Image 1: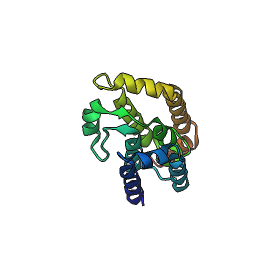
Image 2: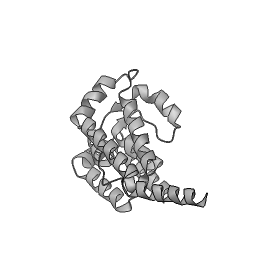
Image 3: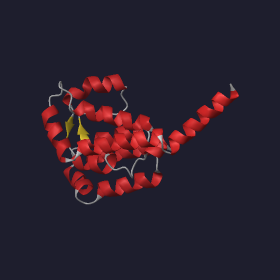
Image 4: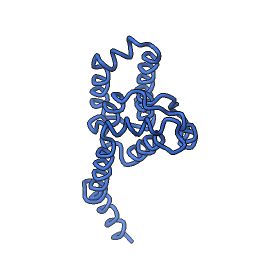
Amino acid sequence: STSTLALSLRVIRESAHRHIPNLEMLQGGGGYRILAFLLYQKRIMTKDILEQCFAFAVHGFTPNLTEIESVAKSTGWALADPDALKYFLMNHQVWSLHSSGPEIASYLLSLLNGLVQPSSIHGVFNARRLHLLGIVKWTLHLMIEIAELYTSGSVGEEASKAKDLENFRQ
């Protein structure tokens, strides 16, 4: 289930928090790649799982808060582990727009925006690290993919068929 997967990610994250050997194994020993592959195999991405993945990468982020609470507390967020961000969140194979929908993508973009808010203490630092990861190109690619999928892609076709059927019934 999704809650079990989110809890498992939290346990792994907590085992690496302030434990240098475990963190080194995640970063250098291929741990992030293996976790990303397992997430890819499950093909499940919910808000809870996304938050646990984001918490791997961002120091100061607390999962399971409301969106308003998260934005309010984002002033202290620091992108501490760019590898986690790269393998979990910037990897389109780990989470797919087809299965997760635009809600997950827009929530991820709002979390990333929290890293570079003008009120953020570490905003400049986070912006530089995100730039090194190629976040601008990735974000543009994501937006184009969303637009294609939901206007002329398979989801858009299904939505237009449903709308046509609804108009026909009226």
